[in-house]
Image (cartoon, rainbow, N blue to C red):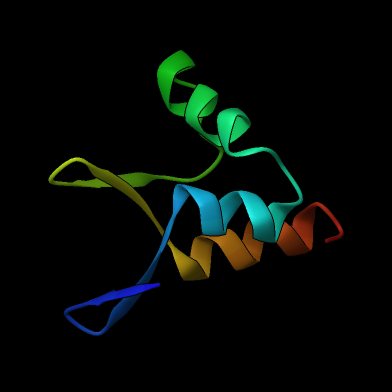
Length: 62
């Protein structure tokens, strides 16, 4: 997990683990333009706001 300006962000791998998905599924969201949560590009990394990941996990019953 990364913290940027007081906001926690999760990597693709952390996001996938929290949502019970394969990291490739999370990458496909971005590639296909169907991300259920917004991503942030930081250098070569794609990050997801931890708060958004937790909200999505709750909606999915995870």
